[in-house]
Length: 636
Image (cartoon, rainbow, N blue to C red; front, side, top):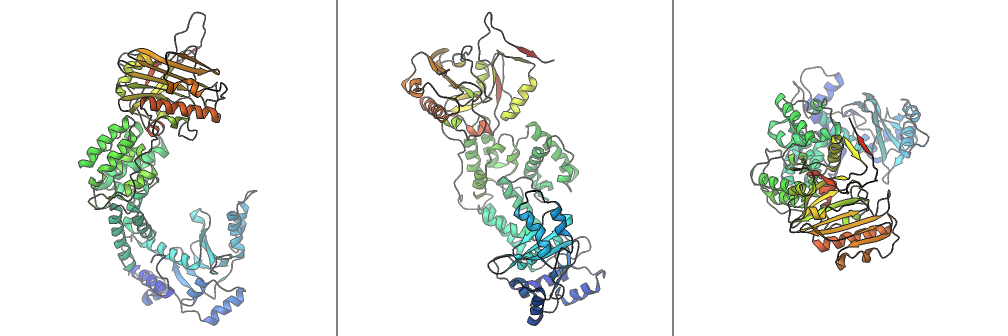
């Protein structure tokens, strides 16, 4: 019975009683009261007459809220309200709590000097509330006469010490009883050995609803499916959790279990990788809790899980899929590794209608979210786009746009103070007609220098620092991430807040280019730890064409700078303190002009949130001259 279903106490309570009676075994261990309730198929008591309800109200000095009053008129009390309340009060037992349990004093003891209204309420309800629990497994239930809605309904609060949670609030007595009915179902959904199979009209309706939800989800109507699955989950229906968790994972929620699907060998190939990746993210190097997370898994599944954990932590896990969708995954990975995350996403989404589930309860491809290159593609918008696309043989058109762009055009996003990452100071090289994997040969000192495996910016810098044994105050080698910057352009980007030293700086532009062009940009207009500066140099065929540097409030230039990039257009005022709105505006205008002049862009998502290949460049400063001193630190 959903909350939208017209609710009347009689049918609801009789259905519940019948379901409870049918769930009992024939072992003869029931109490006399339970045996009578089982025989009569009735958990309640005779209805309370109006004069009996009126006498209760006179005794308590308050008119009872409507839903509790209507309940009493059908049954004057209730047995087995959920799994932990053995007897719920009728007209004879209901009484003011008056902190009989000592809970008000207990909650009051935990108040700090500035308690919230909710914390104060959690104290007061035990003094002013109407106690409804008569017999229970350490669960207290009160109706709060001060928490009243527009219909005169009183809120219900429950608390049990073994839950270790604040009191739970229900808006009225009817909602509370519905929740207890769901709790009864959840506790019976998987009967123990010797118990009768738990099948009734409610379970049959909900199981049919779960199957409908599965088809709705595959057809792209995930929101409708989610609502239906949430209702079935509330009643503990076995398939609902596993299906619902797949939807929620693509919406960005982690700490999910997929019920038993992830440890089912049929589904483990798709559902185990994201579960293991989420575990690795939260538990770092500790794998002792993995067996608990996958309790019930076979030895083979546990072996796969530990292998996956090692691959996820080392960044070597690779998601694969069958058929045309799997082919698209390989193309998408190749795009993502060079920074084209938008193109990678479009490739996967366009192939999604061709995807096929590995089993009946598989709603969407999920293993890819654990892939080090593909996982960063997921955003909440893209998760919704994937879920809204019909797949698995279901007909229809996507129900939303593809959400295929997370990257802005051009370069100006670097000037946005709210952009991901701390790019107050950065530098990059753009090289025309060169593939990203060729950049080490043009920008590194070592012969045969190669790219590292794709890593996040944090991982790359951590590894770089661990491997260094010498640090020089003069040497300025940059750890750069590489990728494609547009048609026929590649980039090498360093966002680790480098600081320009104009008197020692040597632009790598000339060394980076051959027949085509190379562009070097170094910006610190927002760097609060040094004077504002900006450098641009452009070379072709191994020779610098032009350059300018703004530093110390002055512009120094060489060569014929094109009008669109003329520094006089941008630095009309010689006073531009770092971080000011004027400096940020200048930075943005310069970046826009460079992007327009060369038709280039830098992929924000890949640089700030993705994984890219990296390498270390040669020093961006000249060697020290006679008389110049500097410090070198060597680690043993």
